[in-house]
Image (cartoon, rainbow, N blue to C red; front, side):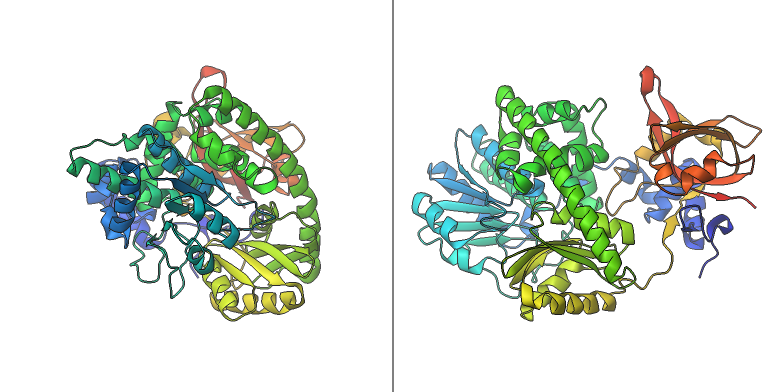
Length: 582
């Protein structure tokens, strides 16, 4: 095992600090010499495997360079041709979407494109409780009676029976969930995670797949001498879905989100403007805003309210309708948080009683709301650094959701469990999955799932690690440096925000902010001082350590950010950890 960074084997939060590997250190030095980039920026690029020759392109990614040929995905040509034919013939189109942000944004992409052509469509989003995830036979039969084309987005890859039931209509599936050995009887199944795909685009969410189809549709229109809508203006929806669905911000996703954030900052989509305003966003959108302010509100309708509210908000062109929908979703989100808190407390207590040392953490409870089990699973995963499954029981069945940790493919394990007959149904992708299980098979299913995850290494790690990119001194932490670091973003799933260590710092002041936060100033005694904020510091041992530092020198670690308070741009450290510099 490599030596701990700054010899911190156990920090204030119980983590072992790790730093750049020798190879990454050499790569960073080569980048500094070849590009004249600051060492801190070079360290960030080296960690992502970016060499000197690729640095300029990485710091300024363009869709032109990264956008693949949509036809590289199987069935894409057929899907785009049939979709365009339906539009030209003024046929009746239905969009069947999942009830989460990815499904809602995917549906809104299609509805927005169709509206630009003067063409409407029927939006159908199933009720989470009454119908469950994905197409169901009664809904598909009804839609097929009244429509010529059904487009399933963010669902459908495993829906053999329901798609077969859509007699009289063509069905196109635009999805990203893990596929089985056989595909449903749809006209086209466009999915980078089909088993016969290369997997090169497997990181896309459904909205990314839908966007690629619209790119191909526009290309076919140009070939016929026609012109489609400018798709760059649609990237705000793709960015929202990519971040909210926790898709990795690498490759094409990184470029889609980066450009999408710029589009969103232009405030051109009424639904996102209304949602941003009611969430009190006062700065340019970032992945944090998408993942923690906007995404949960869009999701709230599908979780505990009316399933189609989020998609309707994202698709509307009417500011008044957008304001009303955003207000309704905000209220539902508040209610969702209250329900979630009750289920979270009960689930954590149950998981702790069962034991948190195994490869899987799980909990199941009577009447737990299906709309919050996924969020609670995320909370358990974050608290234990293990894959987590939370299940709501009702009658003789349980419906649940799981979240995984990096390097452990939960979707594949759930899919295998379903194939073995231990689940009534189940599916998903690497980081998230859903399942339905018979009550009397619950324990057996979770035992088997734990075995499958253990084979992938779940639960085998030692103390949690805090990965640090480089050492930094307060005097180097200027606004220009933070701007250059941000150029290596956006940061999120699959591309964690860079963290820096400030060695041997003296805390010059420490002040509580609210109930649990802490504001400090620190420096090395010879140069400028830097401010830091530690959110939730007094919810754990970090706050007491810093507040009672007694003049001791400390190693501090966290992420650099710009504080725009009062109209002044100042650098501050988002403090995450500390250790005595003994």
